[in-house]
Image (cartoon, rainbow, N blue to C red; front, top):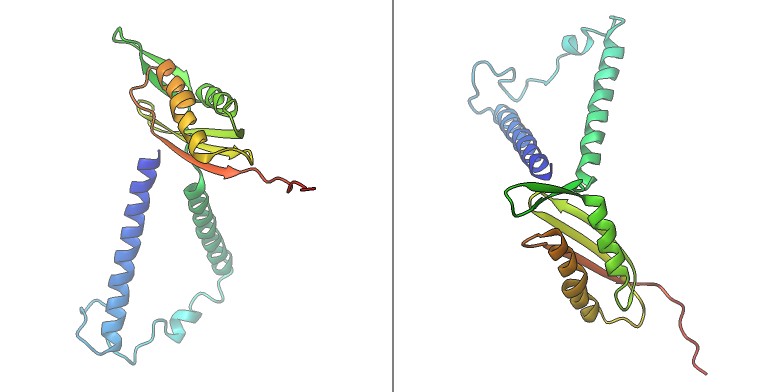
Length: 195
């Protein structure tokens, strides 16, 4: 999903950029009185983008303003939908596991996430853990967010996460690799009183 989204984004941004560069270059060429193609509607610096007749042509039609408002509303809704899709992180629903006999088994992504969260939370110095699976069905990746206790060492917590929780998940799921992005932060706590 994310690869397709990236390709669509690149194609749309490239097309929009190309149209803006070509349109802006042609308008700039006409404004500077440079030669422009014969079909171009503006041929010199004295030309306007919309003449008075063009601006007032549809003013008296009863369908014009509702159509304009509906079209602009649709453009705004599509832009908002596209913006929301950018921030949505695609979670992996299932993982394909090679069973060794030429067949494949399917493991639910939520199940692996919950097991990883339980294992990570059980580690020394970890208050809470949040795990999400991303990537492809055959090559999953994990994002782990650990909330560390005030006394915890980030290096030790990260080391035990890799050697215990992630290694256990990788072995039990039969995965050759499980790339992980870990984010650590300290749990807010009240200062101790020294007497």
